[in-house]
Image (cartoon, rainbow, N blue to C red; front, side):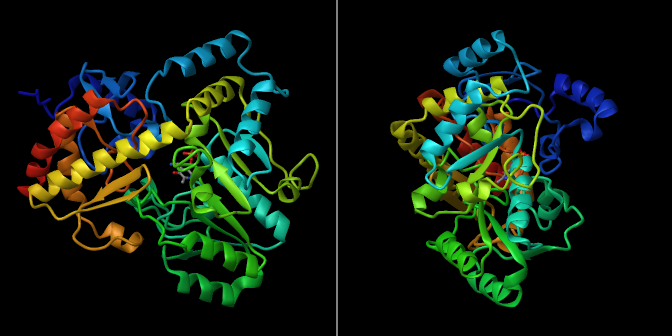
Length: 429
Ligand code: PMP
């Protein structure tokens, strides 16, 4: 029978104590601290394909994959080789390089709505810069966003944000020009545009919200948003930091045939190194410095290691790859669904392509209010039962589960084996 790890993790616990002395909360990004599920965050020491190993020497099937940054799992050999090769030629120049040119060409070649793209260091920078550009281009102040959508820690976008901001209940700050609306509610968007349309610079949305759990857009919702924006002279900004190069070769909008004015990317496009981007129509993007007045810059933007990793990762992601990723995601989602159903646990699995999450609720989940009404204690029990059986799920009920192309039959079998006992643990919690 399979081993069950103890809840205590002594080496990680000792490292976490040390970390708390020198780093706020012991972590460099809040959700890593396991606040939403309790217990000791695992210090990870290595990764290989679908697996990660922690400081106590325990091995897990990884269903976080660095929050979506890893399309091909850990230490994918061609990605690692590309980084090594780039590093041997110099790690940063602060001058143009062919690596950033090739990555920009790969992005514009894959995403029809992107004619020009600017590379940055993080998803936060990408959305911050896109918002600045939207305000600069329209001369309008207001940003419309959806409750539960997370776009990084940009002041104007933290109002009712998802992800860690959701679990930690952050106060709203510096958000006076931000209007927050319920997701999937077109009437709310329409009446807001009717009232404030001439002051709205842009509406920003996640292509598929995946920071309050996965809440797929109703069919046609993104296209309707695009039309409303156009009608009122506001820009339609779609955040594809998660979905870009993960939901499909051209991201989610390409699958839906929706054309945003501006898009943001991150995670997958960096191949596991820090890289992100924003892009869109040439006429808009050319308003950026040095050609235009909207200032935006970055010392390490287009970093040679990150562009090499990103390009290697994108080259491995052909049509077959995405078909397989979608299939593997469906298998994991269906297995979780079946195990929870068999154990009589109220739940909803919501999936959009290869993005999915499990809500512990017996109600529909169209928006943030419904997502936050789920039983997060049930998720914590489920999370720890899976962790004890060697499956590393996102340490919060409000995050997507991420699969990678490295999730092979053996790893999948381990997930399947762990699920029934974890589902049973929830049913008796
Ligand atoms: N947008 C979305 C949709 C995200 O999921 C995230 C990060 N999870 C961000 C933006 C911010 O990206 P970063 O953490 O790289 O700043």
